[in-house]
Image (tube, rainbow, N blue to C red):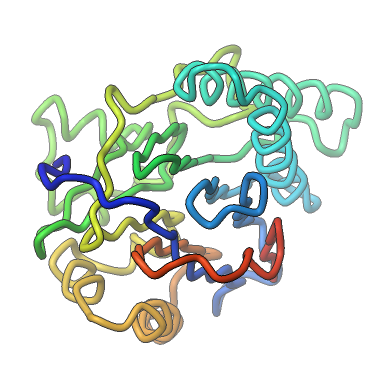
Length: 271
């Protein structure tokens, strides 16, 4: 689902984020990153990464992914965004593998990563794993990313129904993640998505999207107040005893005249 509306001039990205340990886990291996290029509220990078691995290695992997992707994109601003995002993911993958090889306690660690770059009112995304990116446009929600999981592959082959995706006993088996395979095939947006003042985008880890049906998630995302939306996601995921850490970034847009740079250039949320 891509916007057919004419892009607004100088849309400002409004970012709301959460990253929670959740009611079951004892520490948070997720990481959320928001980075403003040149302190501009219309040029932003958002990442959700869901780490995995024992002895706190998951949080190491998700941190490496976020920092490596952000650093690479910052240093390659003259490359095409699609090419730069793919190269950033490949470098993050190699860095995680190398770090694990050098530290036995962290060997085999990995992380999902879903990243969005918005520039000139156009959105680009890159993705590996089972975190997700959703677009909400004209009240309709669409999942833009493809889960790199065994059950999603089974669903695509017609072996299970969509309703079984969230309940199948092998739902957590990933086919791809940064750091856990010999190579990765990053899903890159085929074409940039024109952003409209009415559009919303949600990046989230499986700890969050796994606690809601598509219909329930769409209802929450269609709420008018983004502050209330993100608070509802947090409260309901906790009340429903999410069995993993859960993280989300909600992106909305404003056409107000820019009056100041964002408070911080980079925000990492870890609980």
